Length: 360
Ligand SMILES: NC(=O)c1ccc[n+]([C@@H]2O[C@H](COP(=O)([O-])OP(=O)(O)OC[C@H]3O[C@@H](n4cnc5c(N)ncnc54)[C@H](O)[C@@H]3O)[C@@H](O)[C@H]2O)c1
Image (cartoon, rainbow, N blue to C red; front, side, top):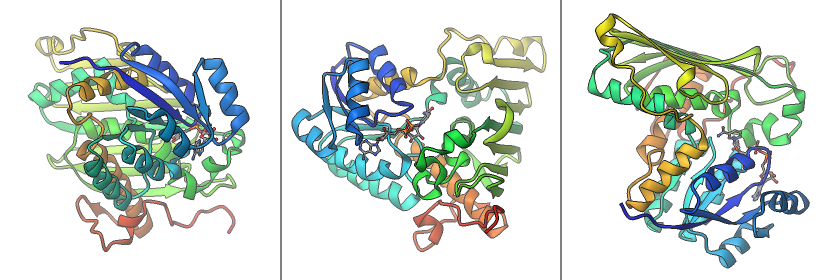
């Protein structure tokens, strides 16, 4: 592997941007943060001062022209992800964009075209895949060591109050591109479907309860896998005792992860069918599933001119799943995978168009 060095720019300097700075700095000196952009000049300059970022811009265009970064990290509201990714790819930068990457399969397919023309990669943040326990589990599943899946439980039970929704984009389904399902539950659902890619059918309900918002704050789905196993998915922003819980019941072991915003080895447990199978759960290192780990792996892929893990088909899977989940909730019927064609309205938007039970 040739280790290269990359000049990086960060777009968006809001609440989650510090995690991007930390992840970049954790991979120094392979990557250097040379500039940041924010629409709000005062806040952007303050952020650059606090984090010692040498150049600040209020315009992405101007930044791309002057800085010509090798890579760009995008940490802006979801509805800006596609136009910003397109600009950066066309400026010949690799892109690591926050979730959700986009709000429709149509937009995803546009990104794929631009990616191809540019010769650069656009990847989505999905840091939960990069924890050491998750990586080990993926290996065990792929080698068939655990047998087939019987049952999965994938519950993201979080709480978001009025203060959280006072940031305008978070309360509006048009700007958030969904709600707690696409913004919070996406982490654990992405992890589940990366571990177990063969889902087949989803039946879902998506709701907005109590709060004066258009984003969803509760959803529930039942998923059927090809081998016959099933999953229960719950995404909530209404759960006062917060928890992120993944449980996978295989023939030869139950594997569980219980945490909140990230998980390291200590958050995982393994209940084998017998003592021999206990040896499967030998974790060599303790890497939490955080952005630092994804950025490091992303740079490895770029060094090797390889497609990064959460790009292309590996980024599309969760988007297709979300599209089917919202479609099922809207139509009140199960939706089969691969059933959404370009002529389907849901190909053009995953945004929920269900009726909320907030007084209309
Ligand atoms: N991966 C995770 O664990 C995680 C956690 C939290 C948030 N996020 C994601 O990060 C993104 C940002 O969330 P946040 O909570 O930091 O939002 P935020 O509102 O706190 O910050 C967004 C910033 O982007 C700036 N901005 C908006 N449009 C811009 C543009 N065109 N050019 C430059 N700057 C622009 C805004 O001025 C603001 O400062 C969202 O996509 C969110 O889903 C990811």
